[in-house]
Length: 351
Image (cartoon, rainbow, N blue to C red; front, side, top):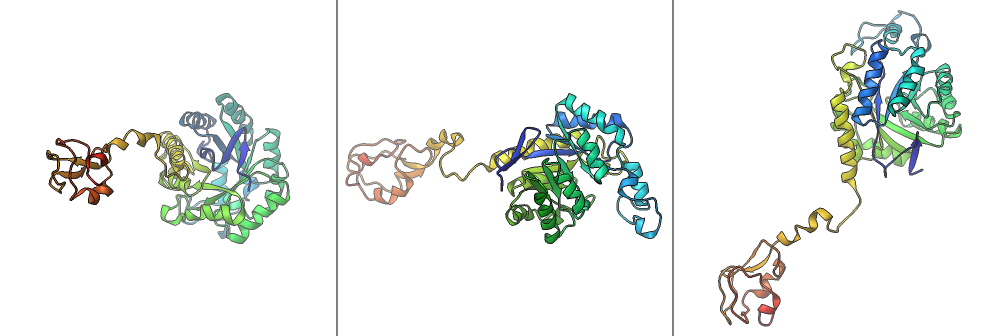
């Protein structure tokens, strides 16, 4: 496994801060200015990238109202797939201005293509990377087409079993993909945290010899921050201006202040991981003097015996170590020692 991949000059791997993708998805709600605003807020929050979804209702499904095309339950209950995606899709003529806006803001932008024509469009715009959505992880021809671009790939595994994940990874690698991150995902909207099984992140990395991360559909940041401790080097979260905005994905997306917290808290979690270390840290060095040690707590005359009444283990730490207490008790002082004196070995006869 390569220790990192690079997207648009940014290294992504366990030795680098978590890469945060703000998923714009359908949260433009049909207004390109809202899309621009989400991008601006993502940049302010500290996200590394903004991600789009490139499809139309014609390319992702068909206009059919038979039972198989109906949605029952959940956020989109009562709609057909065609109706859902007609309202949710991002018009293709928005892509160029959105890519230009990202360059203006200084934030990386790429997308999830859902068919070959979407890949062609994104190649024309020189997208620096590609994301395969969880519902498309079984579309091996699409993965092959994306891999042949030679660009870094991110594959989301929601709903996929071990065999399907292995097929997707093998297809990507066999067709030229040399930089890959595989995201653990639960394709529920929203997804309950107690179904996330975050330990799978580390297993993905080990089992498939890839970098791993998290596509998070929970409604807060606890799951995402926790994932960093389990090896997630990349985190993707849906982002909106208003969770109550009424759009297809608004209700399970982060608002700008929450995205900012995600960017800060995941970086803090990553920094806190550090390395295996048993040495004193810089923060601790100044406090060593406040550890416990042996002190004379009552005046002791020369030749007097040390007892539990005149010697105790207390703070601060300028005297003998507490573990030497038993060596001192019952021995005699070789000089007068005043209360509040740190007990030293040379003050004790035959110690």
